[in-house]
Image (cartoon, rainbow, N blue to C red):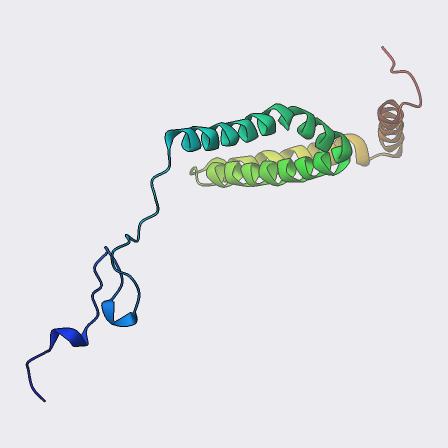
Length: 150
């Protein structure tokens, strides 16, 4: 093998043309002819018209879309909102739980309220009847069966 490389072995890869050994002309440039300003401005106008047409029809498209898919969109919104609210509630409870002596204090308050509720409403039969009546009236007010008592 010799270290001398002949120039004719490698084709001319200059941007001005093709290799002479391939039989293609080398006088013509590889670049596209430059676009005239009128072609460029016409293309820009066409693009601008398309964008304007799309943006002008967007409110009608969105109102039709929302009108057609109103119930599923509301359902998805409620699901997303409930997931976010549960995550926020859990984060808030975790932050409160990290405060020293606050969690045990809330537990003691909960035990005390449970003991008071059992003593007040569940210990005697007459108090249980009173609780059932107040629960029934609350249920009727929520379901709309009777007018609320003032």
